[in-house]
Image (cartoon, rainbow, N blue to C red; front, side):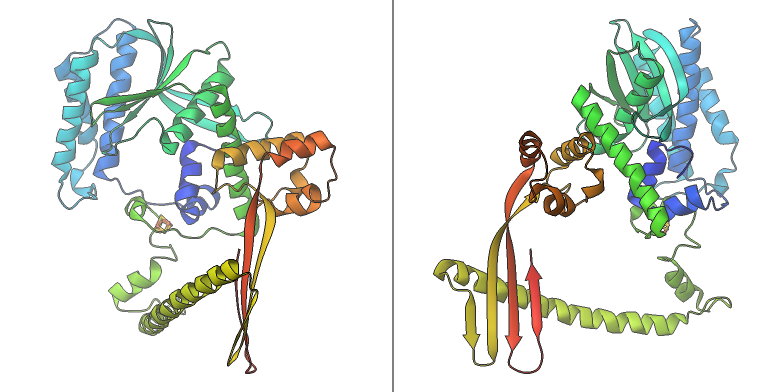
Length: 412
Ligand code: SF4
């Protein structure tokens, strides 16, 4: 278990568990690659912090001074060493984009004192209620507007367009609200505001108490997932566009073969012959294509048999070369996270209140077989649990060729 968690660490685990392991568990020292888009964010954040901190004291930094401060941030770097992740942009483009962002924001919000500043780049940590898990967060700006609303502000300098219903917005901004409420219980009229600086937009949202409860539960579950992964040593590498920002590519198991192929020579300390591995991969892929074709045909035939079995109330079909049995049964099941994340969070909270944690599994089977079907609880508790139960079909199609081979396929 880490000493504390953040939106960023849990997001890293969600995006790539292997990167999480390198960064937060192994703490692998890295030479950090500075990318132009992330540094653009750093430089803009620093200038905005300065503008609002001075503005709170009635001091307005002139626009050209703010721009000079921004350029001074870039001057701290040797821009030739800055990596650019897009083929179409140069470092100068990113510098210019930052200037445009700041210029627009300056025009719109100067003299930066439309509210009472409660903190800029504010560090907060807190323990998630009813858990031992500590969280930390940095809030870009916390301030009280003239209408007495407390606004938790976050600046985004990327291109992504977000909505206030986006789970990523809720995960990040909701965590900030939990942190603010834990530290300052007196601040209760809170609005979350994300400033999409590149789009010149602000998205806002107020969270209901039940949404905050749901978020707290998902944070608890996310931490438990990291602990479970550490217990099993299970940190798979999940590749994606995010890899370009990863500082651990040289040790990542998903990247090593490609690197060896490109280097055209094997590393002394690795028992990996790149060409042999490539050939093995190609043979596997050829068979995979074949088996997918066969699998699709099998699925189609199975579906036809199931429809026929339902329509004609027949459970066994005899062919010249063997028999196929089709079993269709009804079973009760608890809602799963992939079906309805909100109902699933309510179910987990209910199980905790009923002290049924030991029976709780992600697919709900433990709860169903050990508790619900045995009716081992008072009727009112069974009724509460029953709200999360639905009926599902369990279908099995089993083929038995007359030859001494057996083919069996199941489907739930
Ligand atoms: S390179 Fe990609 S897959 Fe490998 S650890 Fe980094 S983010 Fe994960």
